[in-house]
Amino acid sequence: MIELATSVAKLWQRIPKAVLFGVAVLLQCALLVLMVADRMQILREGTEVTLQTQPVDPRDLLRGDYVVLRYDISQVPAGALAGKVADARHPDVFVKLAPNADGLYQAVSVHAEPVTVTAPEVLIRGRVGNYGGSCGADRRRFCDKLPIKYGLESYFVPEGEGRKLEDARNQQKLRIVAAVLPSGRAAIKRLLLDGEPVYEEPLY
Image (cartoon, rainbow, N blue to C red; front, side):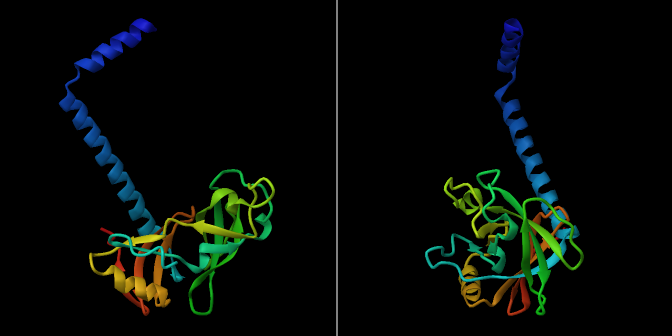
């Protein structure tokens, strides 16, 4: 075994650094392509849901060229999960959404595992803060209300455009349309300002 390890080490040392660098670059490119392809699948195949944004704490301002986003569904009642032990530091949950009379999707219930939904309902996957909010004597139980992130909490915009969108967000004039797959994975598809599209992700 030691001889094999030594042989492998010697062989590794013989490989030109340029070749190793090229392999590393190719691996990074392949990973990027997979990430883009995964996002495109969500945007093309996902069910569209419209979400209302909420004002963000003034201390959490525009960062660089992206807008920080928060939604009606960013904090939801735990329901049957309240008081139960979370199985991870940042547990995944599945939130059932359904449209209201205005067509905006709102949280109906939250679950530790996927549940069956009937259209126009959708199930979106999110991640809760520390141990479901860090409640209970052991600080590892789900709180009555759960802070949840869905991977929809920021959106990159052209330089100089962020302030307008940030102001619109804080006036609740900004909505987003997200695409949600049956698995619960979601991605932002377009931004709506006063009901009109202002940014839309290309589907290539």
